[in-house]
Amino acid sequence: MLTHPTLDQLRQLGLAGMARAFEELAATAHGADLDHAEWLGLLLDRECADRQDRRLRARLRYARLRHQAAVEDVDYRTPRGLDRALFQKLAQGGWIAERQNLIIEGPTGVGKSWLACALGHKACRDNHSVLYQRIPRLFADLALARGDGRYARLMRALGGVRLLILDDWGLEPLAAEQRRDLLEIVEERYGRGATLITSQLPVDRWHDLIGDPTLADAILDRIVHTAHRIQLRGESLRKKKAQDAVLA
Picture 1: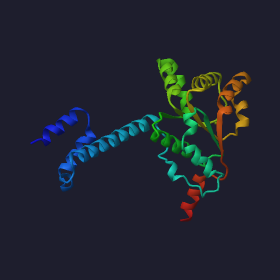
Picture 2: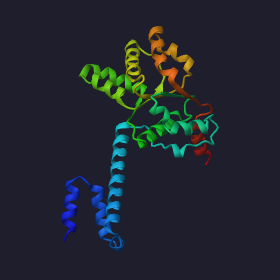
Picture 3: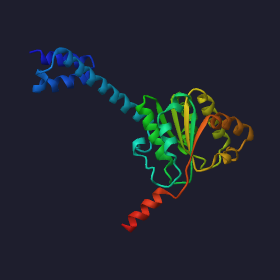
Picture 4: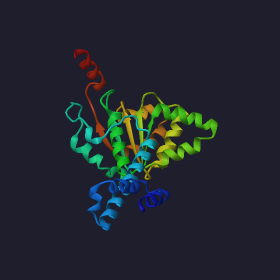
């Protein structure tokens, strides 16, 4: 007699995890062997796990990560210069908590974006807000946002997350408007959030890519001086997979 009213009350209170656990325990013989404290403990455990799962799903939806990647799945056997100890230390997230930056550089196809998304996924699991942006698409979105009134809101989103991932930096030189946008982003985030940048170009070529020497100095000062570095090398993994598929 008590089952249905209790379930209704749990659902009305938004305790969906507890409601599901209540139904499962009530339907099994194991539930009859538990005392009240054990029942309550199991219900609370399920509710906490359910809420953590919902928060993680929400963070991952917001992050819009390009790859479904996890730090546990990183391939350290491929010869691309990835330091296992360094990457595993970065995966612990101390640099995010300390609002530092990370630069992953290397030739195309060596897994820069995948590694960045794996770190982004781990940050979401660690209860950090994350946002992934490809640099070419980001600048296009900012240009459109100026015309439709979304610019300030988009800049707040870029500045407000704990980890901002800027992928594919350096594919082409920056225009004047793009330089100013990038300076605004890094200025807003400096000392407030961590930024992860992937690039095919080595850092010593970024100054020329930005173009304006004064703005380049200001931008790089806010990015590079507090940045950890992962420098990859080797052949494209996509090319290798395609060759292996042909041979198979």
